[in-house]
Amino acid sequence: MRGSLNRTSERPGGLVPRFNKLYGAVFWAILLPSSAAAVERNSKVIDDPVYTHAQHLVEVEPGRRLNLYCLGEGTPTVILEAGSGDNDSAWARVQPAIAAHTRTCSYDRAGIGFSDPARRPSDSANAVDDLYHLLHAAEIKPPYILVGHSLGGMHVRLYADLHFDEIVGIVLVDSSDETWYQNVWQLDPQQLRTSYFAMGPKALEHQRACIEAAQTGFVKGSQIYIDCVGSDDPLYSAAINAANDKNRMSVAYQQEDVSDANSRRQSTDELIAARRWYGDLPLVVLASSPSGPGANETQEHRDAFNRLHAVVADQLTALSKRGVLRTVPDSTHDIMNTQPQAVIDAVLEVLRDARESKGQVHQISGS
Image 1 (tube, rainbow, N blue to C red):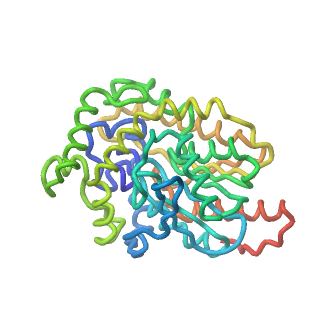
Image 2: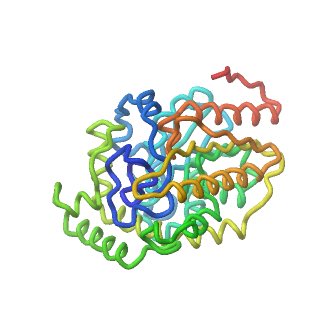
Image 3: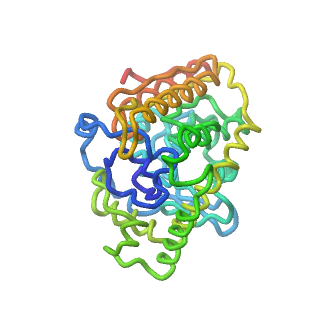
């Protein structure tokens, strides 16, 4: 999404001109061209001032805090896990609607947004460990419904694998899985500018330049600023863009970027080792609707990618005997922005199921 310069995929098709880093093509870069119709339907600028400053800084270990933002009341609590490089504002179009029915929390992972820098690699196990300590330190007691977008889908799955007794439902929003990165790379390594699970030499050199620029101070408008920080995201107000830019200009964010990219192999290994069957756990898998080829992509490659995209969605759905797969029309990879109602509906459906299975009287009207 809009916070991640090195991940063209997080806002594919040029919807937002913020993704300029050399290794931006990796994995999701060839993903879904944007739908003009979807963008038009969801064009209201996000201007909530809560995204311009920290909300609740929670200490997850001595001297290190994560930013937590919760709305609403009720149980189970919905936990929103953003995609690679994204902060809590990724959920701005869905969190308030879900919070009308139950407590709903988003947060910033280490080094992102208003959270303190990480002290260890950005693999899934460390992300899960941080989230576990965040929720318990903030006294947000289980049960939880986990909602994960893109790479965040891998993080919430590992959380469910390791803390299954705390989870009563999952929603995966165009999620990656432990087979995804290698399989995308194998479709055609020449179409990607990085090596499998790690940045190539040119990308590493560029990333070092971004870190050095952050250390000495970016000059706004310079080429290195454009490459490493990018341009404003039209989804957000000037104030939110300014807050996000300040974070992306930090050494912590630039270092998190390289750690994130180089932790993918470790994350996949962690999911493979912990993978479990979810039984009758309510699970909804939302898949974006692939379109024509992206920039510098052949139709043949796009067709192969679409087949892989469908296989991954099927594999995720099969994790529960109650798994439901929905392809969301007119959506990009960032379904929560281009088709937020699809995410809201999926979460409320899982919430109804979770409450009914616990014998609670649910009070969720149809959306």
